Amino acid sequence: MAKDKSGYIIAAAFIGPGTVTTASLAGANFGFHLVWALLFSIFATIVLQDMAARLGVATGKGLASAMKDMVSTPWLKMLFIALIVSAIGIGNAAYESGNLTGAAIGLDAFWEIGTGTWALILGALAIALLWTGSYSWIENVLVYLVFIMAGVFFVTLIVAKPDLSLMFSQLMQPRLAADSITTILALIGTTIVPYNLFLHASLVAKSSPNTENPTKDKVNTDKRNAIKACRKQSATAISMGGLITLVVMATAMMAFFNQAATMDAGNMGEQLKPVLGDKAQWFFALGLFAAGLTSAITAPLAAAYAVCGALGLSDDMKSKGFRAVWLAIIVCGVAVAALGFKPLPAILFAQATNGLLLPIIAIFLLVVMNKSKALGDFKNTLWSNLAGVVVVSVVIGLGLYKLTSLFI
Image (cartoon, rainbow, N blue to C red; front, side, top):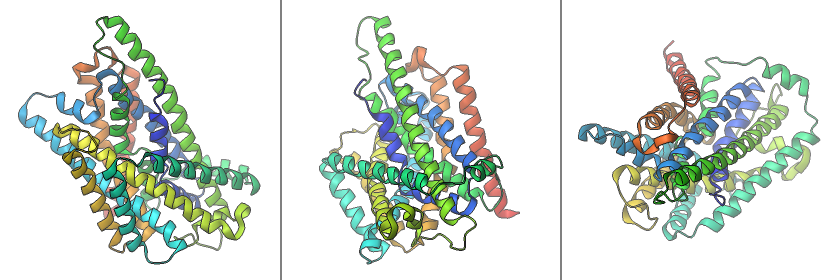
């Protein structure tokens, strides 16, 4: 497990165009009044990803396989499979549309042929990369670009000399109202990404300590050490991702909150002008493209692991079933992105959808972490369960608040 970098992959996966766009919208429209939602999201992500990673290490299986294997009743097993396939399929299709839309916005700033056309081109590129299985080097380059963009946001924040007293004042005045609930759910949905739970468990399962060792104590010790290392790495990486999101909120707040200008798809890059001047919009566009294409590859890949695990299909990237799943996700994402929806609402909707789907996956994860026999000594502790219940309760409460606000 020493070489395992799954925590950083998870952090890079949620720093997509949805994160940049949603954090920018939150900062521009609400200042720091919604930072509480981001802080909760980071806490929740660390809690849930720790469970997913612990599951992968302890059982050597992904979350979908563990959920399916937990029950023996045929009809209940079929229900689990249906829920996994539908929840991850719907969630990732929505997420994919946001990824492609965000990348399309970035490319359209360089060459205006329409975000719909760019979505088609990007979808074709993602298909080509996943079909060959040789996309890793491109993904690494794009992840580096995302972190370079994050560095520019940090420099911008320092150069612009933020009003720290105002930020702290707003931080201490959290806001929860009908006009902010969609943005709150989007912040949660773009940070606690449901598909990352499946992806994380599958990634660490592949490097889980050998369970065929005849000495049970040695196996448990190896697993316990692997879990500690994974927990530390994940907490560090996810916290870094949260800090990046916070800085994006801060730069957008300084540029747009209570200012005459209103942020839209065409001027989001204005928040980088203190450092980059007239080139700010181009750099912001490049960052959206990098983040979008990276996530456009990761989302269908995670869906393929989840669905194939639920259906008992091979998770070999070149197998027909595996390819069919990620291909369906990309096609759905391209179709939605190419229909001409306004870019920012489409991205915000994708993140809010993830926030609403999260309780379903989180509840299943909690059940597995308490009931799966394969976990043995690595089942949830009382504190893990309490933290998980708090996370699920808050997300369900926000979702219900969102639904009631539509009818009142």
